[in-house]
Image (tube, rainbow, N blue to C red; front, side, top):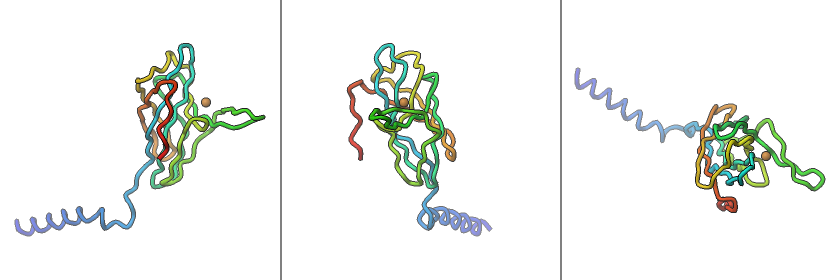
Length: 155
Ligand SMILES: [Cu+2]
């Protein structure tokens, strides 16, 4: 009886071990947020842009909103050109294709923080929560960089 139980447990354990390599489909994964940063703001400036990279999950998703305790309001902005001038405006969302990479970078789509109660200081970090249609809420830590700082080279 004891021996039977041992064999059964062993079989169960082996079945478990075998699962990841035997699976035809890769394990499902959700959207990932990385490399979030913002420029430090001069005194009196109450808006700032956050840039980050969205890595798609196993199925397509969509970033629909953002929020942070560091600012009264956060909006997703896209940059468009009108009459030779770059203008930004709120957008309803950003599509993240399955296993795709979407970079929110300077001169392009960004998370706009508005009504900052105090300037962003280089070296500080603050939490940002992104709301996705599929993945739900995903939190990320935003790094504040010195005003002249440039983003790291794309990889
Ligand atoms: Cu903006």
